[in-house]
Length: 144
Image (cartoon, rainbow, N blue to C red; front, side):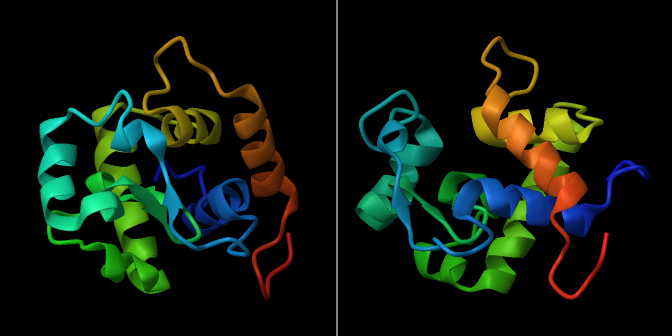
């Protein structure tokens, strides 16, 4: 993380956007990975062969997609919150911070939601919610 970004607080804020802070962690079927824009990606096609519709779901408090996880992840692995947290953090570090060179909470939130903070698709409400949660929603057991 850039030094000015608090990693645990960022993960907490993203979980607020993705699952109401872990309230809705059940797998969510994502149509774009089943029959939509991402369904013909070689990685998604390989995962579909292995896991069927499980490859088209997002998992855990961060609703991370299987295709964005470490290569050995299976759908049942992401039902474990520690594993989902690890894969989410690795994905943010590898793809968003190192790959896309994001440096702000806004850029990270944009990339996490839309796939790339540098494109023209800007999920303004998602970013605003993430910034609000990051700034104002204390981590469990902590104060701001």
